[in-house]
Length: 260
Length: 248
Image 1 (cartoon, rainbow over the protein chains, first blue to last red):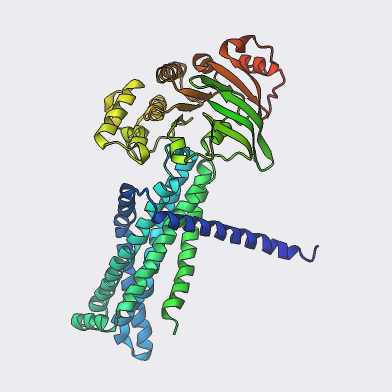
Image 2: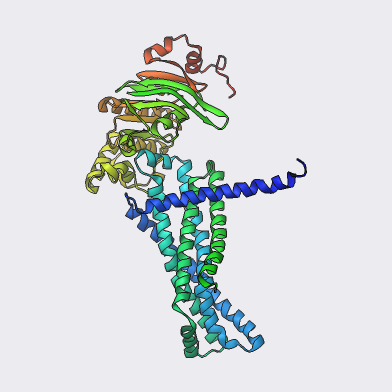
């Protein structure tokens, strides 16, 4: 019994984690099953699209601009060790559209949107607004979860596309003004080495990350504990879970998309 | 008529309802009294399907509650929640007309707004209130808006969960009077849970006492004062001594 004690310490959180994954998977399946079945709530969808897409634009744009600039400096400094400074435009472009655009965009949206969705739905739960929805013959899953998840799945790839462009522009600004690249050559190198699949894979990642962000916000909001502390915990858990899942999904999708 | 037969519900080891049997006749106002944490709200939520009972049967006008089409079943109910439960993101009139703007009872927007304003007027609120948001209202006004929402679709059955909690005595009196008037003029069946005895005397046709997860006494309001039931006597007179433990 005593000899097995260390395993029980390890086993309990593992089983708890698996049970949580199972509950999230059921919640995701339920959400997807409601996507195609009426009633639909277009106003709630459009409001969520504005909230998630439009209002996240400044934070994604700023993050991408600085990341693109920093990436150009790093690649230049690294490339100088083996006289490969010329790769800066192509590596900045590929790095932004394949990895940094979707991942940083997803993480920024997770910080901004997963927390806000979890706090909003969690507060609705503790103030009985979710129960009120049910008594008013409205399915909370359809009214609250589906519009947000659908909006995030559409909005995040659009944000990633904008972020990619701004990130590449950030690299261009640093490359031309700080590192002395010729503007025309920089743009030509960016265009020549970038393939359609580089961009498309990043957008698919963005869609997956958008789905994860809204799903985590809704899941933890719907399962929020009582009171301010319960809502606070739900908000924190939503951001942490969304961020970890984004990074894990990014690795899996990269394996799927780019493994030889 | 609402009929509850042997309803049981436990949350883990905590057996909240331990075989509740209760009949609420059509068109009457039943008030369920009982101390805090005795399962009054859980009982109400069981009838609405917000909480699934572990065992027992609930019928509404002879139909088993959990087998009816959910939308049609819930369309017969209105509910005033303890804290109002108004939707923060919607203006007052859209809260009141929520059911009239979507689902099986959907009406044109202008008509739904007119009905909402009429219902607001019925609960003593001015039409200007319609375009405010719930956060801009006082507690008493939020209760009235909640009441207007509960009656907007003219339901057959209305539930009131602690309708006077958190209100000053005058506003509580206003809400009690409104509930009584509305239930009488609509001919609705009403079920109220409260521990406010002023409210009980103003609203009830019948009273049921819930204690230890079961109905200890039920009777007409006039019989409540005269009953020798020790639970009812202790509760309605607010005595510390008696069969109901002060520390729960």
